[in-house]
Length: 386
Image (tube, rainbow, N blue to C red; front, side, top):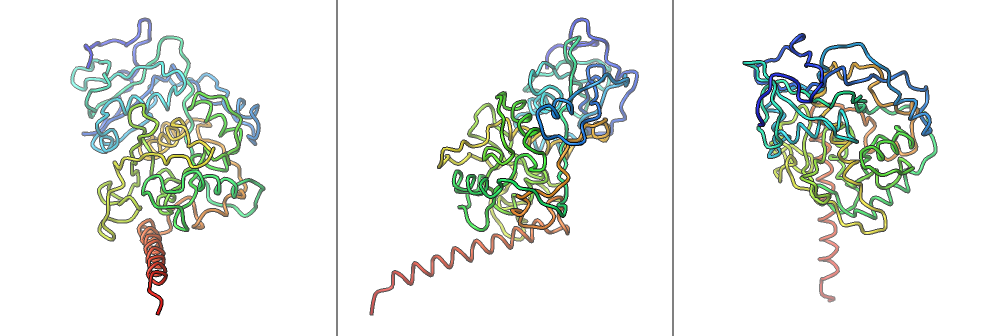
């Protein structure tokens, strides 16, 4: 860490109000906060968000009166270290940037000494501690917190779309599951990085903000999808599985298991229970995007960064953050054409505790049976003619 300081990190900044409103912190807990005086809250959005003008209206902010720090993430430091891994504090700093200031990344991360009350600016290589961290920005900087996404269950109506074209494009581009390497087959599917019911306009905004590229894209553009094994798609779809970019290499990611009920050391890369079907572990598995086999580019790291942030928010996001006005992403209320792509009727939750294992085991069995059928055909074709 850098040298300690009992006062704010930036000249002229107002002292942290955390001393005036101390957070109740349990032993072994880590809390990430942001100074509320730097944050504005979202105004009421339009009823429908289908155009760029609607998006801008939905992102309009107004001053808020809360003087106390806003807790953003909270959890046992031992649990967060499962995801920070070798990155240590850099991981938490990146999460703070993405939640608070994904474009400019103007803030710094400070940690409070729980004994003395002094604040110290962190270094990327510092070990994560059970403590209160605060993301601070220069005086006068106004933050607009990133919104969090919830997947909705399917409704009864339908709308036109290009889901089938997207599925074909993603399958032709990737030709294998990003994580397991399973060749494209009945056991793989196109997995959406952003919810398809988010709509084109908001998806384009996320692309622009997190990728730094101005583009007007359809939510069915192939860059919004990756090919995954079916059971992994179930997890990826509801933010139980994320891909964390390692360093600044766009070709190296780690798969991180965020499933609340399955320990990270008990799930294989096929999304099955280790005790049921032994195999390489999912969590921490190094992932290399498939070399594109078509002109369609693979998703840029910024999109997968947005999806990974949603996984972190789902696992560690606080009720204080999720309770902020209009902080949840708007999604279209009707069933989209691409909902027909989903293999299971409920894409918002699993129907029973072992569903992810049962489905993964079923899909793996299907794959094994198909491989055996292909082998039998090869043996039959290779038999000598009488």
